[in-house]
Image 1 (cartoon, helix red, strand yellow):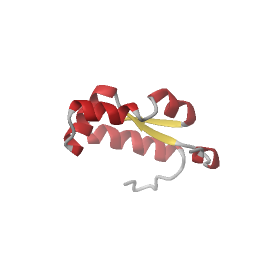
Image 2: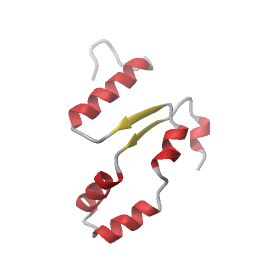
Image 3: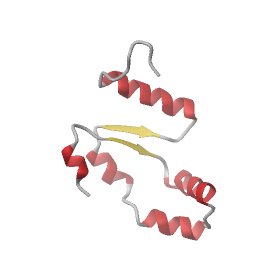
Image 4: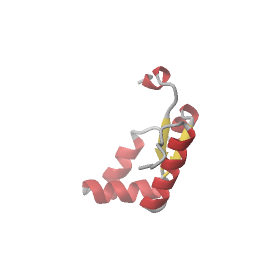
Length: 84
């Protein structure tokens, strides 16, 4: 939609296609075919990576994602001394 051009920076969260497929099927109760159709309507990772200053790779545990998030928030100065 172009909204990224009005932002100071963009943070994107990406995961492998196979992991996204599994998550969509579980979360929304979709068949593999329906989940693939939904994914096909979305941009690929390169689209988001090219528009983002920061990338969160959501491939592992919630702890790993939280650690990446804290690192980015610290880098951009949004993490207080106590942290989230």
